Image 1 (tube, rainbow, N blue to C red):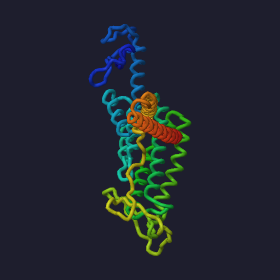
Image 2 (image 1 turned 135 degrees about the horizontal axis):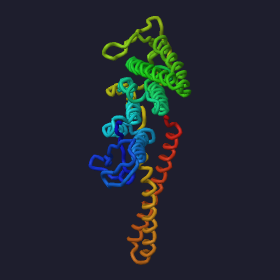
Image 3 (image 1 turned 180 degrees about the vertical axis):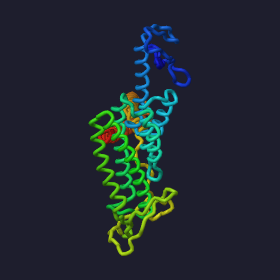
Image 4 (image 1 turned 90 degrees about the horizontal axis):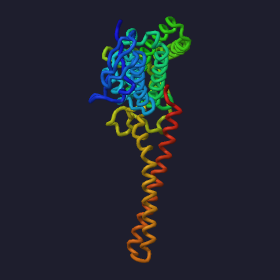
Length: 360
Protein backbone atom coordinates (compact mmCIF):
# COMPACT_ATOMS: atom_id res chain seq x y z
CA UNK A 1 0.00 0.00 0.00
CA UNK A 2 1.42 3.40 -0.97
CA UNK A 3 2.11 5.78 1.89
CA UNK A 4 0.62 9.27 2.12
CA UNK A 5 1.92 12.52 3.50
CA UNK A 6 0.69 13.39 6.98
CA UNK A 7 1.03 16.19 9.48
CA UNK A 8 0.45 16.45 13.20
CA UNK A 9 -2.25 19.09 13.98
CA UNK A 10 -0.14 20.32 16.92
CA UNK A 11 2.99 20.79 14.82
CA UNK A 12 1.56 22.30 11.60
CA UNK A 13 2.63 25.82 12.62
CA UNK A 14 6.19 24.74 13.47
CA UNK A 15 8.31 25.32 10.35
CA UNK A 16 11.98 25.05 9.46
CA UNK A 17 14.18 27.61 7.70
CA UNK A 18 12.46 26.82 4.39
CA UNK A 19 8.99 27.38 5.92
CA UNK A 20 8.22 23.64 5.79
CA UNK A 21 6.37 21.95 8.68
CA UNK A 22 7.51 18.54 10.00
CA UNK A 23 5.38 16.32 7.77
CA UNK A 24 5.87 12.57 7.60
CA UNK A 25 4.60 9.55 5.66
CA UNK A 26 2.01 7.11 6.95
CA UNK A 27 0.30 3.94 5.87
CA UNK A 28 -3.37 4.95 5.53
CA UNK A 29 -4.46 1.41 6.54
CA UNK A 30 -2.58 1.48 9.82
CA UNK A 31 -4.49 1.88 13.09
CA UNK A 32 -2.16 4.46 14.63
CA UNK A 33 0.86 6.55 13.75
CA UNK A 34 3.19 8.82 15.68
CA UNK A 35 4.35 12.36 14.98
CA UNK A 36 8.16 12.22 14.69
CA UNK A 37 8.37 15.78 16.05
CA UNK A 38 6.29 15.64 19.25
CA UNK A 39 5.72 11.83 19.42
CA UNK A 40 1.97 12.32 19.72
CA UNK A 41 -0.18 9.29 18.86
CA UNK A 42 -2.52 9.93 15.92
CA UNK A 43 -4.79 8.05 13.59
CA UNK A 44 -3.56 8.13 9.97
CA UNK A 45 -6.90 9.62 8.90
CA UNK A 46 -6.47 12.65 11.18
CA UNK A 47 -2.82 13.13 10.22
CA UNK A 48 -3.53 12.90 6.48
CA UNK A 49 -6.46 15.31 6.76
CA UNK A 50 -4.27 17.74 8.72
CA UNK A 51 -1.70 17.69 5.91
CA UNK A 52 -4.39 18.23 3.26
CA UNK A 53 -5.80 21.16 5.26
CA UNK A 54 -2.33 22.70 5.55
CA UNK A 55 -1.76 22.40 1.80
CA UNK A 56 -5.20 23.84 1.00
CA UNK A 57 -4.53 26.78 3.34
CA UNK A 58 -1.32 27.60 1.49
CA UNK A 59 -3.07 27.40 -1.88
CA UNK A 60 -5.91 29.59 -0.60
CA UNK A 61 -3.41 32.14 0.73
CA UNK A 62 -1.69 32.31 -2.66
CA UNK A 63 -5.08 32.66 -4.37
CA UNK A 64 -5.84 35.67 -2.14
CA UNK A 65 -2.55 37.24 -3.20
CA UNK A 66 -3.61 36.76 -6.81
CA UNK A 67 -7.33 37.53 -6.75
CA UNK A 68 -7.68 39.98 -3.85
CA UNK A 69 -4.41 41.87 -4.18
CA UNK A 70 -3.64 41.36 -7.85
CA UNK A 71 -0.01 40.55 -7.04
CA UNK A 72 0.56 38.06 -9.87
CA UNK A 73 4.35 37.83 -9.52
CA UNK A 74 4.33 37.11 -5.79
CA UNK A 75 1.40 34.70 -6.18
CA UNK A 76 3.23 32.83 -8.97
CA UNK A 77 6.25 32.44 -6.70
CA UNK A 78 4.08 31.22 -3.83
CA UNK A 79 2.39 28.64 -6.06
CA UNK A 80 5.83 27.57 -7.32
CA UNK A 81 7.03 27.17 -3.71
CA UNK A 82 4.01 24.99 -2.92
CA UNK A 83 4.77 22.81 -5.95
CA UNK A 84 8.39 22.50 -4.81
CA UNK A 85 7.04 21.35 -1.46
CA UNK A 86 4.41 19.01 -2.93
CA UNK A 87 4.48 18.58 -6.69
CA UNK A 88 1.14 16.73 -6.69
CA UNK A 89 -0.82 19.84 -5.68
CA UNK A 90 -3.31 20.41 -8.50
CA UNK A 91 -4.57 23.60 -6.81
CA UNK A 92 -1.09 25.14 -6.84
CA UNK A 93 -0.53 24.16 -10.47
CA UNK A 94 -3.86 25.68 -11.54
CA UNK A 95 -3.08 28.80 -9.53
CA UNK A 96 0.29 29.07 -11.26
CA UNK A 97 -1.43 29.05 -14.66
CA UNK A 98 -3.87 31.75 -13.53
CA UNK A 99 -0.93 33.80 -12.23
CA UNK A 100 0.71 33.65 -15.65
CA UNK A 101 -2.47 34.98 -17.24
CA UNK A 102 -2.72 37.80 -14.70
CA UNK A 103 0.93 38.71 -15.31
CA UNK A 104 0.23 39.35 -19.01
CA UNK A 105 0.70 42.94 -20.15
CA UNK A 106 0.06 44.95 -23.29
CA UNK A 107 3.36 44.21 -24.99
CA UNK A 108 4.12 40.82 -23.44
CA UNK A 109 1.52 38.13 -23.00
CA UNK A 110 2.05 34.86 -21.15
CA UNK A 111 -1.07 33.27 -22.59
CA UNK A 112 0.93 30.91 -24.81
CA UNK A 113 2.99 29.82 -21.78
CA UNK A 114 -0.21 29.24 -19.79
CA UNK A 115 -1.61 27.15 -22.64
CA UNK A 116 1.54 25.01 -22.81
CA UNK A 117 1.45 24.50 -19.05
CA UNK A 118 -2.23 23.53 -19.13
CA UNK A 119 -1.72 21.04 -21.95
CA UNK A 120 1.34 19.49 -20.28
CA UNK A 121 -0.23 19.08 -16.84
CA UNK A 122 -3.92 18.42 -17.53
CA UNK A 123 -3.83 14.65 -17.91
CA UNK A 124 -1.50 13.98 -14.99
CA UNK A 125 -2.85 16.41 -12.39
CA UNK A 126 -6.24 17.90 -13.29
CA UNK A 127 -8.42 15.28 -14.96
CA UNK A 128 -9.02 13.26 -11.80
CA UNK A 129 -12.48 12.70 -10.38
CA UNK A 130 -11.61 14.30 -7.03
CA UNK A 131 -10.28 17.40 -8.83
CA UNK A 132 -13.07 17.87 -11.38
CA UNK A 133 -15.10 20.47 -9.45
CA UNK A 134 -12.08 22.64 -8.69
CA UNK A 135 -10.79 22.09 -12.23
CA UNK A 136 -13.96 23.42 -13.84
CA UNK A 137 -13.93 26.39 -11.45
CA UNK A 138 -10.38 27.25 -12.50
CA UNK A 139 -11.10 26.70 -16.20
CA UNK A 140 -13.94 29.20 -15.89
CA UNK A 141 -11.62 31.61 -14.08
CA UNK A 142 -8.99 31.28 -16.82
CA UNK A 143 -11.60 32.00 -19.45
CA UNK A 144 -12.76 35.09 -17.52
CA UNK A 145 -9.18 36.33 -17.15
CA UNK A 146 -8.44 36.19 -20.87
CA UNK A 147 -11.81 37.82 -21.64
CA UNK A 148 -10.93 40.75 -19.37
CA UNK A 149 -7.44 40.84 -20.88
CA UNK A 150 -8.93 41.02 -24.38
CA UNK A 151 -11.34 43.78 -23.36
CA UNK A 152 -8.67 45.90 -21.65
CA UNK A 153 -6.14 45.31 -24.43
CA UNK A 154 -8.60 46.66 -27.01
CA UNK A 155 -9.16 49.77 -24.87
CA UNK A 156 -5.42 50.35 -24.64
CA UNK A 157 -4.73 50.00 -28.36
CA UNK A 158 -7.72 51.77 -29.91
CA UNK A 159 -10.02 54.76 -29.74
CA UNK A 160 -13.65 54.62 -30.84
CA UNK A 161 -13.10 51.23 -32.55
CA UNK A 162 -10.08 52.58 -34.49
CA UNK A 163 -6.59 51.29 -33.75
CA UNK A 164 -4.04 54.02 -33.12
CA UNK A 165 -1.68 52.70 -35.79
CA UNK A 166 -0.76 49.52 -37.63
CA UNK A 167 1.68 48.47 -34.89
CA UNK A 168 -1.14 48.53 -32.36
CA UNK A 169 -3.29 46.51 -34.74
CA UNK A 170 -0.59 43.88 -35.30
CA UNK A 171 0.03 43.53 -31.57
CA UNK A 172 -3.70 43.11 -30.96
CA UNK A 173 -3.93 40.39 -33.62
CA UNK A 174 -0.97 38.48 -32.12
CA UNK A 175 -2.64 38.46 -28.71
CA UNK A 176 -6.07 37.64 -30.13
CA UNK A 177 -4.58 34.63 -31.89
CA UNK A 178 -3.03 33.50 -28.58
CA UNK A 179 -6.38 33.94 -26.83
CA UNK A 180 -8.10 31.80 -29.45
CA UNK A 181 -5.53 29.00 -29.13
CA UNK A 182 -5.85 29.10 -25.34
CA UNK A 183 -9.65 29.02 -25.47
CA UNK A 184 -9.50 25.99 -27.73
CA UNK A 185 -7.37 24.24 -25.11
CA UNK A 186 -9.91 25.24 -22.45
CA UNK A 187 -12.65 23.83 -24.67
CA UNK A 188 -10.84 20.50 -24.97
CA UNK A 189 -10.66 20.28 -21.18
CA UNK A 190 -14.30 21.25 -20.53
CA UNK A 191 -15.45 18.70 -23.10
CA UNK A 192 -13.38 16.01 -21.42
CA UNK A 193 -14.73 16.78 -17.92
CA UNK A 194 -18.31 17.12 -19.17
CA UNK A 195 -18.15 13.77 -20.94
CA UNK A 196 -16.09 11.89 -18.35
CA UNK A 197 -17.89 13.05 -15.20
CA UNK A 198 -21.25 14.28 -16.54
CA UNK A 199 -20.50 17.70 -15.06
CA UNK A 200 -23.26 20.25 -15.80
CA UNK A 201 -21.05 23.28 -15.12
CA UNK A 202 -18.49 21.91 -17.54
CA UNK A 203 -21.22 21.55 -20.17
CA UNK A 204 -22.34 25.16 -19.63
CA UNK A 205 -18.75 26.38 -19.93
CA UNK A 206 -18.30 24.26 -23.06
CA UNK A 207 -21.25 25.98 -24.74
CA UNK A 208 -19.98 29.41 -23.70
CA UNK A 209 -16.52 28.69 -25.06
CA UNK A 210 -17.84 27.38 -28.37
CA UNK A 211 -19.86 30.56 -28.89
CA UNK A 212 -16.94 32.83 -27.95
CA UNK A 213 -14.41 30.93 -30.04
CA UNK A 214 -16.67 31.11 -33.09
CA UNK A 215 -17.21 34.84 -32.54
CA UNK A 216 -13.52 35.65 -32.08
CA UNK A 217 -12.44 33.38 -34.95
CA UNK A 218 -14.70 35.30 -37.30
CA UNK A 219 -13.38 38.55 -35.87
CA UNK A 220 -9.82 37.49 -36.62
CA UNK A 221 -10.39 35.96 -40.05
CA UNK A 222 -13.20 38.03 -41.56
CA UNK A 223 -13.11 41.51 -40.03
CA UNK A 224 -11.72 44.67 -41.54
CA UNK A 225 -9.67 46.71 -39.08
CA UNK A 226 -9.34 50.48 -39.36
CA UNK A 227 -6.46 52.56 -38.01
CA UNK A 228 -6.70 56.19 -36.89
CA UNK A 229 -5.36 57.43 -40.23
CA UNK A 230 -8.32 55.83 -42.01
CA UNK A 231 -6.48 52.91 -43.61
CA UNK A 232 -8.28 49.57 -43.70
CA UNK A 233 -6.55 46.23 -43.07
CA UNK A 234 -7.40 42.55 -42.91
CA UNK A 235 -5.57 39.84 -41.00
CA UNK A 236 -3.29 37.68 -43.14
CA UNK A 237 -1.34 35.30 -40.89
CA UNK A 238 0.91 34.86 -37.89
CA UNK A 239 4.48 34.56 -39.09
CA UNK A 240 7.04 32.07 -37.79
CA UNK A 241 8.63 34.75 -35.62
CA UNK A 242 5.28 35.24 -33.88
CA UNK A 243 4.43 38.60 -35.45
CA UNK A 244 1.19 39.30 -37.25
CA UNK A 245 1.03 40.13 -40.95
CA UNK A 246 -1.82 42.27 -42.31
CA UNK A 247 -3.03 43.22 -45.79
CA UNK A 248 -3.92 46.77 -46.74
CA UNK A 249 -7.29 47.11 -48.46
CA UNK A 250 -6.22 49.45 -51.24
CA UNK A 251 -9.61 50.72 -52.40
CA UNK A 252 -10.97 51.65 -48.96
CA UNK A 253 -10.46 54.63 -46.71
CA UNK A 254 -12.45 55.69 -43.65
CA UNK A 255 -12.90 59.18 -42.28
CA UNK A 256 -12.24 58.44 -38.60
CA UNK A 257 -12.71 62.07 -37.47
CA UNK A 258 -9.95 61.65 -34.90
CA UNK A 259 -7.89 64.67 -35.96
CA UNK A 260 -8.90 66.66 -32.86
CA UNK A 261 -7.84 63.86 -30.49
CA UNK A 262 -4.37 63.25 -29.18
CA UNK A 263 -3.60 59.67 -30.09
CA UNK A 264 -1.49 57.08 -28.28
CA UNK A 265 1.48 55.01 -29.35
CA UNK A 266 3.50 51.98 -28.31
CA UNK A 267 6.66 53.95 -29.15
CA UNK A 268 8.07 55.77 -26.11
CA UNK A 269 10.04 58.08 -28.44
CA UNK A 270 6.94 59.38 -30.18
CA UNK A 271 6.44 62.69 -28.38
CA UNK A 272 3.38 63.60 -30.44
CA UNK A 273 1.37 60.77 -28.90
CA UNK A 274 0.60 59.55 -25.41
CA UNK A 275 2.66 56.55 -24.39
CA UNK A 276 0.58 53.39 -23.98
CA UNK A 277 1.28 52.02 -20.52
CA UNK A 278 2.02 48.33 -20.32
CA UNK A 279 -0.14 47.23 -17.41
CA UNK A 280 -3.45 45.44 -17.90
CA UNK A 281 -4.27 44.01 -14.47
CA UNK A 282 -3.70 46.33 -11.52
CA UNK A 283 -1.64 45.31 -8.49
CA UNK A 284 -3.48 46.54 -5.38
CA UNK A 285 -0.84 45.49 -2.84
CA UNK A 286 0.40 49.03 -2.14
CA UNK A 287 -3.16 50.41 -1.89
CA UNK A 288 -4.23 47.67 0.54
CA UNK A 289 -1.14 48.31 2.69
CA UNK A 290 -1.63 52.08 2.73
CA UNK A 291 -5.35 51.74 3.47
CA UNK A 292 -4.53 49.63 6.52
CA UNK A 293 -1.97 52.14 7.72
CA UNK A 294 -3.93 55.30 6.92
CA UNK A 295 -6.31 55.09 9.89
CA UNK A 296 -3.35 54.52 12.19
CA UNK A 297 -1.75 57.66 10.78
CA UNK A 298 -5.04 59.53 11.24
CA UNK A 299 -5.15 58.49 14.89
CA UNK A 300 -1.52 59.46 15.52
CA UNK A 301 -1.89 62.85 13.82
CA UNK A 302 -5.16 63.65 15.60
CA UNK A 303 -3.61 62.74 18.96
CA UNK A 304 -0.62 64.92 18.10
CA UNK A 305 -2.93 67.79 17.12
CA UNK A 306 -4.85 67.53 20.39
CA UNK A 307 -1.62 67.30 22.37
CA UNK A 308 -0.18 70.36 20.65
CA UNK A 309 -3.43 72.30 21.20
CA UNK A 310 -3.49 71.40 24.90
CA UNK A 311 0.17 72.39 25.26
CA UNK A 312 -0.59 75.68 23.49
CA UNK A 313 -3.23 76.50 26.10
CA UNK A 314 -0.66 76.23 28.88
CA UNK A 315 1.80 78.33 26.89
CA UNK A 316 -0.70 81.10 26.09
CA UNK A 317 0.28 83.43 28.92
CA UNK A 318 3.84 82.18 29.40
CA UNK A 319 5.56 82.10 26.02
CA UNK A 320 3.83 83.71 23.07
CA UNK A 321 6.31 82.32 20.51
CA UNK A 322 5.84 78.77 21.85
CA UNK A 323 2.08 79.26 21.84
CA UNK A 324 2.08 80.30 18.16
CA UNK A 325 4.41 77.43 17.21
CA UNK A 326 2.20 74.89 18.98
CA UNK A 327 -0.96 76.27 17.35
CA UNK A 328 0.69 76.00 13.92
CA UNK A 329 1.85 72.46 14.72
CA UNK A 330 -1.65 71.49 15.88
CA UNK A 331 -3.10 72.86 12.65
CA UNK A 332 -0.56 70.98 10.52
CA UNK A 333 -1.20 67.75 12.42
CA UNK A 334 -4.94 68.18 11.91
CA UNK A 335 -4.55 68.89 8.19
CA UNK A 336 -2.36 65.81 7.88
CA UNK A 337 -5.02 63.71 9.61
CA UNK A 338 -7.69 65.04 7.23
CA UNK A 339 -5.46 64.28 4.20
CA UNK A 340 -4.89 60.68 5.31
CA UNK A 341 -8.61 60.26 6.06
CA UNK A 342 -9.47 61.47 2.54
CA UNK A 343 -6.94 59.06 1.04
CA UNK A 344 -8.39 56.27 3.20
CA UNK A 345 -11.83 56.97 1.72
CA UNK A 346 -10.44 57.07 -1.83
CA UNK A 347 -8.54 53.80 -1.38
CA UNK A 348 -11.58 52.17 0.25
CA UNK A 349 -13.78 53.11 -2.72
CA UNK A 350 -11.19 51.84 -5.18
CA UNK A 351 -10.96 48.51 -3.36
CA UNK A 352 -14.76 48.25 -3.28
CA UNK A 353 -14.85 48.71 -7.06
CA UNK A 354 -12.09 46.10 -7.35
CA UNK A 355 -14.08 43.62 -5.23
CA UNK A 356 -17.21 44.29 -7.29
CA UNK A 357 -15.36 43.56 -10.54
CA UNK A 358 -13.14 40.79 -9.19
CA UNK A 359 -12.49 37.97 -11.61
CA UNK A 360 -13.64 34.61 -10.30
